[in-house]
Structure formats: C-alpha cells, structure tokens
Amino acid sequence: MKKSLVLISIVSLVLLTGIKWVKLTPEGEKVRVLNRDEVTSCKKLGSTTASLVSKVAIWDRNEKKVKRELEYLARNSAASDFKDQQADTVVPASEIDNGKQKFDVYKCVNP
Image (cartoon, rainbow, N blue to C red; front, side):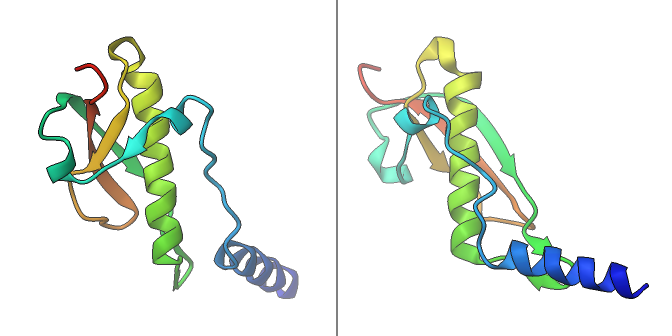
C-alpha cells in the first residue's frame, strides 16, 4: 500500500511538472494554427478532434500546456489525415472541454 502511494505520488508529480508528452511531427511542423478571421480566403477541408489527459488524479494539468499539446495533436492529425489535400492550417472550432477540442482544417496556401 505504501509503495503504491509513493508510486502514484511520483507519477502525479512527473505529470504536473510539465513533461511534454505530445511531440510535433516533422509534417505537423508545417501546419500552422490561426484564428477564424485569418482563414477567410482559405479552403476548408474538414475537421479533426484532438484529445488528451487534462487531469491527473485530482490535479488539473497546466492549461497552457494542455492547449499547446492539443494544437500539436491537431497539427499532426491535419498533416497526416489531410495529406492528399495538403492541409496547412488548423483553427480551434470549440473550447477545450475535459482535454478535448475540435479543430477545423484548411488549405490556405494556393487554395
């Protein structure tokens, strides 16, 4: 029991200290994040939903890190799922809710 409590404490501490779990792929690096009014001349290709763990035990993860990692997941998804359509932009289409966020996917360069 004592070992389990120590292990849970260590894992929680590691998660809360900001270790970056989501990595941006080389393809995802080519996809940018813009806001809605910056994509008026772009072609909408579809949407994607990113999700991750936003709470560890009773602690919420850092909001900025969750936001950044959701953007990384959306960028990675746009790059792979819309590869044939050459997606280059994602736009948040919803608020973050329990570690989940919807993004619209666009092609803005030579749409």
